[in-house]
Length: 458
Ligand SMILES: Nc1ncnc2c1ncn2[C@@H]1O[C@H](COP(=O)(O)OP(=O)(O)OP(=O)(O)O)[C@@H](O)[C@H]1O
Image (cartoon, rainbow, N blue to C red):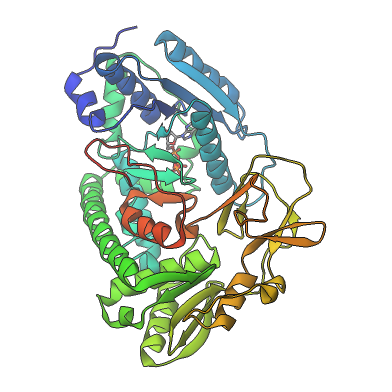
């Protein structure tokens, strides 16, 4: 079925995106993602008809009728000759935090579907309305003192692209397009869409805000929120560039699990960038997805400037002494010994891949075994190197320590790559520069290139 869509609209939405490896379109059946899919199909048919396009609907199984809605999407796709899959969330459903768990499952299933087809790109239908709502909700939370640390970060809203699991790009081409315009496109094509009842249930914050924005000065508030998001997005990119520069100039990794900061860092740049660098490196060293609290990080920065110290924040021991400022994972709360399993994010810090499943290998911290390892003649204090190594993962077989994955005695079937903990799951494109700097520092896998033409490798 041919669509009668203004070529300029789909061109402006998609022509900057690199579709070489194909695309998964995440389609819920609502108006936004239905419009996304049809506009995208139109664009690809005209510009690159051989592109692999797969529409995927996740059936969360949370509402009666969700399976029927997914079937409706399947029929629409069949009409337009678009490959479509329905994936069901079958895992256990938590009793609290259900929306977050559903979202986590949704992205996991979408990324698995993409990867199974060799596709590195997932497109979602988030619109300018979603963006404005996100920014306004965060603003309310900031003002009520909930998340002081989102200043300059959270108000940027959703990024145009987010790297999921360090491997699949989630791209949001409709972030600058109003929902009403998309619905007009669908109406002109006589295409129906499903309305999710939770979107109008005013027991929830977002539907309440949506209703409030529908009248009076709503249009102005949305425009203002979008302007704010654009400005904050730029500010965050600039902060990221300055932070990446500091990390490259002042941070090294003298030994496994040990980061050294040259004390020159403390007086090198704007305090905001230095504190952001500290927060990223603390979260990375501690293996924590969330950055440490802004106020506590600023206090740590102040104390570091004032003199030597040993403190713990974000599961990271910060040891400032004459020979430098050293960061290492604290010894408490390390994962217990466990069988090596494919895809584990060990302690939030190491991504484990396994090409064999004999089950005979265990992964556990070096612990006391670190004491027996020879430490070379280095400038770095040996006690610090041993303490850092004790918290690193080692492979064990029949009670014997085989060393770090990748070392000469360890079996080659197991691979471990350091992960940049705060960005291991979601890396918004705003933060590419600092993520790349930290990845380079700790030897994480290189980032895949941004899927936008005219951009080089991330
Ligand atoms: N059940 C689903 N199946 C496939 N894609 C979906 C599904 N639900 C949402 N999406 C995708 O996510 C986009 C945003 O949907 P929605 O606003 O409902 O999700 P959200 O939870 O607010 O977003 P986020 O996933 O960023 O938290 C949709 O346009 C669509 O691309």
